[in-house]
Image (cartoon, rainbow, N blue to C red; front, side, top):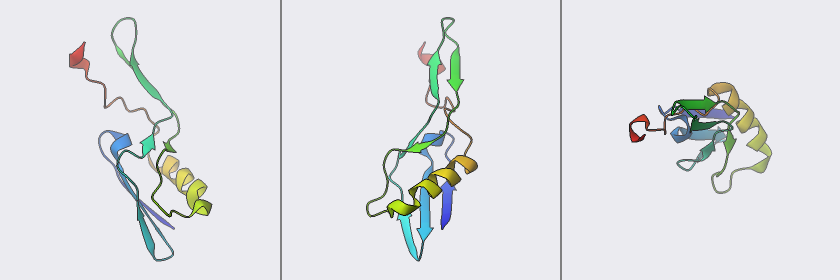
Length: 92
């Protein structure tokens, strides 16, 4: 199995593809979900909390037996989210 991640500055928008036994599976855009969260505190400062990634949408016909391995490798490769990239500080 070969996992390729093209990291985007907003990590949950990263492009993912997996090559397994001669077949390549392209993951749908916005398939990642952060285990962290991002919010404004009482002082209107951005707070980001980190947590492991999950995959909320898998490619059609992706072999279920490889899902846990892909998720494990993904969490080893990408910094845990939330990165806070989707918070617009100019909107407050």
